Length: 192
Image 1 (cartoon, rainbow, N blue to C red):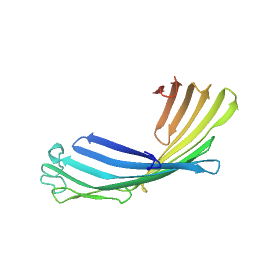
Image 2 (cartoon, rainbow, N blue to C red):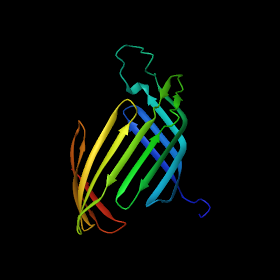
Image 3 (tube, rainbow, N blue to C red):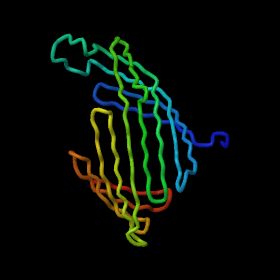
Image 4 (cartoon, rainbow, N blue to C red):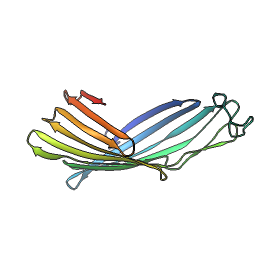
């Protein structure tokens, strides 16, 4: 649609962990244009985040603990996100955030479920080692302002078809990566 000058999307995420049930539903819009020797992309999302808890799934340390609901509770709130991404032929960097308004979800039993803003940073570089071999180091940083998680990655790409590399998450471990780009639309990736 030419009047949009960008792209639109719909993101639906459901997450069930133990007694918790979360559902995120967001509509997004992104715009990209030329800037200097590269391109800049900007996007935003608006939607709803719904959270629920089956209190019967939890075992209270103290009988009648008021912090644990006796049955199913749920609630929802408006959720916003945004981001910006810049890339050239060799370098890219992006920053985005989720839960911009730090929504408070009031559960049906009157208790509050507070969400905190999350920040994400990605950056990477591609260096030609020779005409057939590329080196691609990158980082991925996630933070909620109180805790952070950093992934440091690097891969070697042969003939733009096969690649292998390693990813290290600080204080957690090492992952080996490999892949094959069959064509522009079909890629196989394996992590160990």
